Length: 398
Image (cartoon, rainbow, N blue to C red; front, top):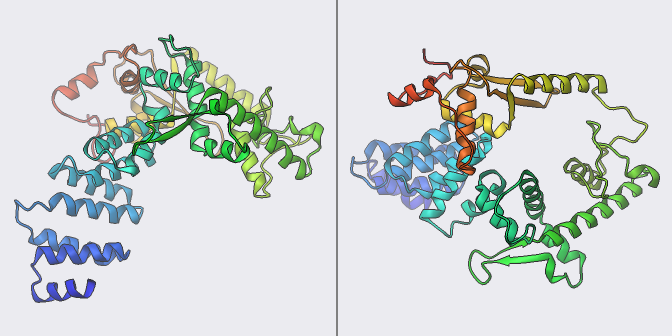
């Protein structure tokens, strides 16, 4: 096919169909440079009313994404969607990049849009499932917990504890918890798993609360045996800590999130835990100072936000992290070399310093309509005139 299309292009270098066909073949062969060349040649020769504009820009987005040139890929996917807002490939591609950047709620919106156009798109559907704890509304999450028999059927309000429970069960589902239980039990108890949409293309198995508890207990015991085989004394296993000094076992003898990581590393013969006699880097005194600083921030009216929300701020305002920190009420607390925590100022008479808080509350209101969004004259004025807060360089527009 490659040779045939190449001959067609040689005979007529402006034949758009031949150029696109050759570019498509080269892309399937991972010849990114060749594919890019002929897609761009096609662009030069396409008529204004050509139906291929969206497709070509979408393919150029795929090429940039394969090269890990995310900014360029995002630009190409956006251009593609200008020509066809229902281009599923571009919607999914844009979602992947936004998710990679950390804006999970934004990514979920792109995946949902893709599924609305193409309900059987497995890539969008799978990625959307992975993001459920980050985008489901309180009402949707409460219903998901009822499906898992994790809250009472008559429950009407989602609590913080409910949200944490859903995240934990969902996390175990994504770790192939259902498969683990099937392998663990010759005949798995029926009350451990619920099948949604049975017999359809959307069939999905989820853990019930009982299944989740059984899974957690079983993994905790498996990890105990692995640590023991690694040379840890039985008396010390439940006192093991991760490299930050946090216990890897809960009082119920199940693994914490970091404990699960330590366990999986131990399966690879890698020691990522501290014995009771081993000291913690950094020192507890340093950690205490950080804890004190966090308390000071909260007393001063700051609230903690997630890394995902920081990326959402950058995407919504077009401002760089540095601009958000210097001018728009974002505070960054460096916990260690590789860990930072983020806070925004919730009590401020200065509209500029309240910008970050405004956007965070607006984002949270999408999931919980009861959240109150504060007024902010600066944001509202910019929106009225169609301006963004920052220019393309990430700096504030004065």
